[in-house]
Image (cartoon, rainbow, N blue to C red; front, top):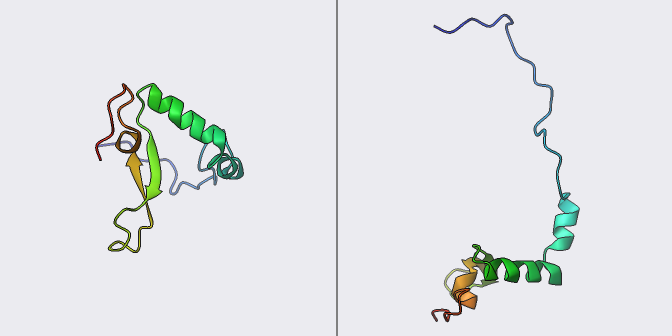
Amino acid sequence: MGKKRSRATQTSKGIHCQKPNRFSKLQRIEYKGTIQHSINKRQAWARGKRVMLTIANPNAKNETNKPFIRVPAEHEWGDWRGKKAPK
């Protein structure tokens, strides 16, 4: 058996996260969609990282609730080693 607690209840201090945010929400919103964001994605793809792109849904007529979908960059740009993308 475990040791019994010395107090009846534990009161929360109201702190949810100890780590400071590197980017605030507003900075992240401003960064997304910029040219630098696209350049960073392209560089990560060239290094072989897993990059996700948001594209218009090709099946939008049947899936009206999803106008955009996220796909891996290899499906759009091809393999980072120079192989063509499957279409």
